[in-house]
Image (cartoon, rainbow, N blue to C red; front, side):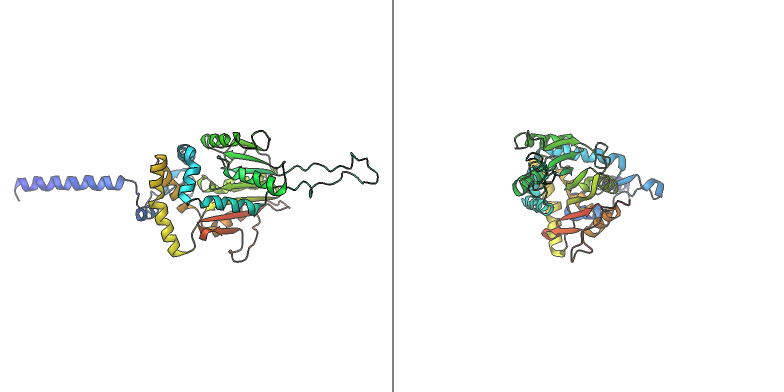
Length: 344
């Protein structure tokens, strides 16, 4: 082989090496590659002392202290178009899921049914025998920044139970999401009613919420983004009153193989593109669909709720109860009840 041939061969080899290196460094964006990438991400340290400090961010393995910042960047980016994107991502079905979620919780207290005379009618004056005013429910809506579920619960309590005292606190770690919620609240009937408030808070450390002070804890399409889900469940248990209800609406696992294939094709192929077109942000919506893929299946998450101390409301045909599939498992409602006798 002459020197010219050797030189050409070396140049060709260099080009192939550069191409290989570039290919490995690129993010996976196609459906099949995204699924495969779950098993090809960098593994965290294997020692027990080190592995506890790592978690997932979509299909990427990251240090726990970095995930919160990464998730914050995602939701800061999508806050202004979040509800519109939910419509596009779910073809509007998320509204039906949320309506069903609220109906299943039946929030509110009927002031007639829950009022009682303060003393015996035979010995009291008319003023003393007047009904006592019910206090209403104290609801904590976690990761509910835009207020979508909070408004539904207040509307339901007012319309179905004629309840004007139940109140909702919307807690979210992201100020941009809270700003979107406050903007909506300003033009709502609840803007001056002292029934709706917004606070910036981390679901894993609810330091401003007293123990045993909440009647109903809700979280819709948010818990899969938490850094430490068991810690958040422990906090939910702490702040709920005995008999209080934990309720979670979240994306889950489709239970039909053919439907699951079509759903994943839609999620990984269409949603990031829609995010690029509507919000100018493909990466954030790529993360959102990857986070859905990484979230535990229905039975596994139900066990996590049970391990936090909650009792699961049993329902026939649901692997011991505690959850209800929606749209074939695309979404799922999970519930847990804090025992009246708190032994934790």
